[in-house]
Amino acid sequence: MGYILDTSKSPSSIPHTVIRGRTYYFQMRVPKQHQHLYGQSIRARLSECEEEAAILATHLSYLLKQSWQSNTKVKVCIDQALRSVRPAKTTFAAIAEEYITTRRVDHKSSMVAIRALLTVAGDREVESYKRDDARALLAHLQSIGNKTATIRRRFNTINAILNFAYQELEIDGRNPFAKMTIAGEGLDAAKRGTFTEEELREGYNQSLSSQTGIPLLFPILGETGCRLAEIVGLRVGDVDLVNRVLHIRPNDKRRLKTAGSERSLPLTHMACLALSMALEYADDEWMFPRYIKDDGCYATHASNALAKWTKKRWNLTAHSLRHTFRDRLRAAEVPLEAIDQIGGWSSVSNIGSSYGKGYTVEHLRRYMEQVAII
Image 1 (cartoon, one colour):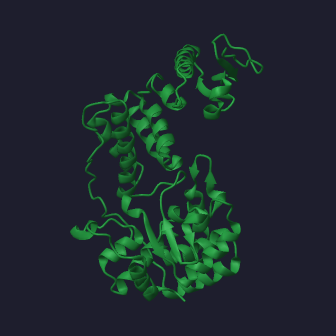
Image 2 (cartoon, rainbow, N blue to C red):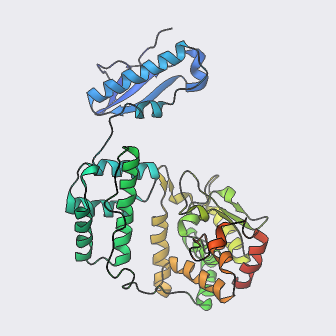
Image 3 (tube, rainbow, N blue to C red):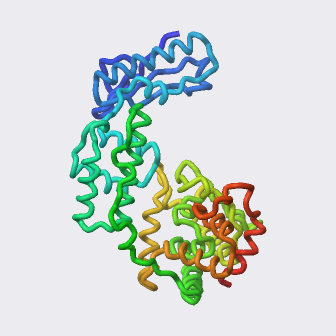
């Protein structure tokens, strides 16, 4: 059996490759007896560098031929095979790009932190950054007027990228951006506003009357206390209107903030009503498909759109709904452990909260019905 390269698209001097634009792609036809595993042909992006593409194509074609000739039933993982010989990217900018793609974090907010570091310290090998670079970043962020909470978020992003780099590149040593002390942290925070019960009721009525996707998020968030991304990234199968339960769980488009964020919540009457209306805008898989793209869940876009709607009416953000919901539960004297479980908050003040199975959905329902807006 021969292994024939399909060169109908464009020529290449490297065996088993074609060129599209400036990029080399691996392309090989699969023998009939193995097509049930791979399909009729295998195609994979290699590199824009001819030398690197040649190394990758040679390695991949060797693995595939060895596998096919041995008649193994185990499929060669193309991505893993390429990763095993692809030259490691070791500069901060390159690692940051890989981190954003791999972890599917918000690109826009991550890039703000990345550009800030590149401005003060430049793009260098990740091992070369020192504590002085962290201090320079801190001074830069302070000089441009960032509040301490914003500075902490920027450092958290840089920390996460460097931790990712140290792990992937097997670098020993301490992350120089970790545990940075920010003078006066939290003292400059403005108290976030909350909605009154009258404003919530007014907002729910306007949302349900509008019968459009964005305003319908308002009562869903208001009656569940969920984070916006948790709702925008819902699959249709996460919504059980028959049993009035909402399942918050991770998926391939949207991660959850913490392990404790995965939970099942009882739905109040108003939340059920809003979700049933939202289903009219859903597709076969996603509740809010306009914010689901190939590379992830664009919750920030939904947040911006909803913020315009809420600020115009009450000068409050959508996240204020989450703070309001916690206040409503606290005012109803709901136990702290139950409040944390409902909202997916970390129970830093409750040592025993991680033990046992927690509250049942029906138990939580009794608490949520106490604060439901009817």
